[in-house]
Image: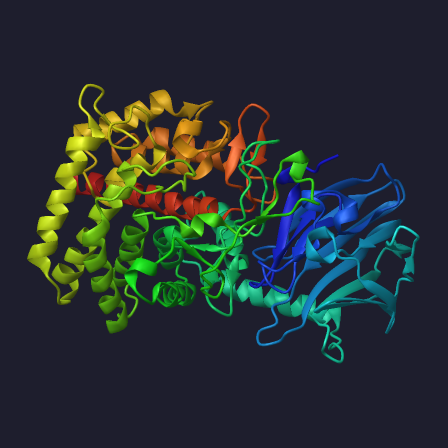
Length: 604
């Protein structure tokens, strides 16, 4: 039986991450990086494709879980007829070291609990069976470039099914440790660490990091902090890149084909991520992300991609894994992402907006960055009138997508503002003419005057939720009747069960069979838009409905099925957690501004 996506938690070390089920099974882990081949892939198949289970032998055991304070340490508590025990799962950050440890501590809380462990190691996305032998108080497994050492006082034994098993009893006050250490197989060995010392160091490190957050006032403190911790876990610390999610091929609709690899870094996420980090006080992470952007985008502007690998890799060749049946039978399972080859004009606006956001929040400037921006705008001037694949990376025919054109407007607008506000040098008058020309074309070709709404692409009837960003981007002011009309039209035509769909999924538009869940970041965009046009109570109500969709660990995926009440898509999703942070900050900012106006107007 497939474990629901919402019944997973994440542990990570800002280099890779594991998904742990409520039942105590690690069903997804890639080593040594987010985008490496998996060691455990039961998430996209079953136990035969790799997992590590630790659980009570009692099949009737009840479980509950939580993170230990503001950390990435996951604690799963099991209650049985004989007693209670807690599994403490975490991955220490090992900066500058090739070895990666995943530590699981089984703590006896009450009475005694008889436990079992089952280890199925499968490299190469569930296909590679390693050599396994006893070694150093545990087992050692080797396959190709990968070596893994398990260290534990529990006796581990092999089975004819090529599985390693063990049984043990934990009594109240005892801790039974397990350490799984990955290192390159050509290395002589690994470094042994005390697991309880590692726990203390990890806990102190996370608490020190969490205390830097400057957005901890108000009713949404817990949601903001958990989202920030999740973003930190999804960061690849050697380069500062932030992956969209820790997983690949979790479906946007159960049984469907909209299954993509999100273990890459999107430039599209740059501005929203920078705002989230900078407004929360995490300048170091924001600076590292900006520097990753500059390195990734370096080169001729015509070669800029919409996404890159963790270190800025450009070749993200997409292929399918036929031996994995997919999550709940959702095929194909994809590795890599072919959308990296698409032309998506909005990416130029997003890069310009991200760098402008860094200026606004006081990140130190870079002459290299401004030279790059001027070259990007010089190139964008020659291509902005071309059709493209749009923000949603459609695999249908290229079109003149409205949001893409708006982001071209944003690109030149942010260049102009950088000159006006920060004294940079550039062809301001020329860019102003281009900005006006782009705006005039959008109003002429993308605005449906009869319905008082902007449409998905030039000449279309369909709407697109990305148009909710028009007032936030500054293309039109919030009070403009066309903004109100577009919001109203999206509420009529794209809202399903109280949440927002991206657009009507039709094969002629995106080249894929119809069917997906509601796209959660779009619903956050609606909340922001409602707040901007003065409907703050409705905005807060929608925001809190969205927060209620998180699982009981505070984690959110990309999409949601409002009928089945199931999370869908890759998990946890950086875009969704960024939206939580930014929407909470935006609603708080509007509330503060409203209160200030009220105080000013009040009689003395």
